[in-house]
Amino acid sequence: MQNKRNVFIVDDHPFVMEGMAKLINEEADLNVCGVAGNPASAIKEIDKLLPDAVTIDITLGKKNGLDLIKELKYRYPSMPMLVLSMHDERVYAERCLKAGASGYVMKSEDPSVLIAALRKILKGKVYLSEVMTDYMLMKAANQKKIAAESPVESLSDREYQVFTYLGQGMKNKNIAEILNLSVKTVDTFKDNIKHKLNIATSNELMQFAISWVHSEENK
Image 1 (cartoon, rainbow, N blue to C red):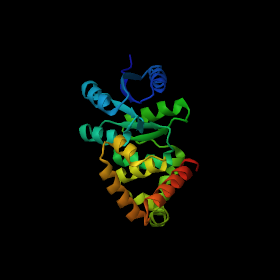
Image 2: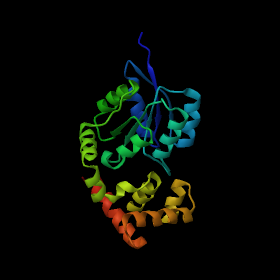
Image 3: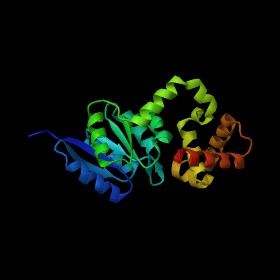
Image 4: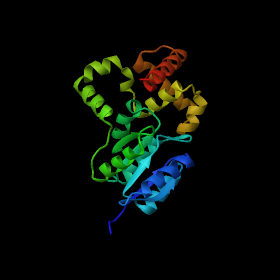
């Protein structure tokens, strides 16, 4: 009998979580050993279950999956993590890999892609779509040009999170609650972002962020 590899699911939508669990459990070589809807519960259960792989959504209620990826990478450096998200891969995939993830799959993909990606990261490899792989290779070949054209690339992960939340129309107070920061700290991040993007006012930053997020999600 084939030994099954244990997968832990982190997603804040019960319907999605249930569908993923059913899909994975139908495979002869995979088994869902546990689920969680938020980072705190995920860390507690993963510490106990020590799964072979973890799937993580980027948006986890008022929390961000990037922070969970970094925490799990610190605790378990060799544990493969697959990001399964509704967000466009061109917006988040590279940052997820830098944070410690082993792959990125969009929820709009065929379910078979999730299974293929899980099997690939369980072998110690990285999974990205063909489109994203080509994009990253082209980006690497034209690094200086892209950096000049897209100053958003210069933002740190936390600055990028604040920037994308601004692009979703959120106010400082909401962003502070989601990222577990003070409003003053969010203001500091906004000042850093304005400096890096050469933007003078908070209103201009908000308009630019909204325009940028909209353009990225509609590429």
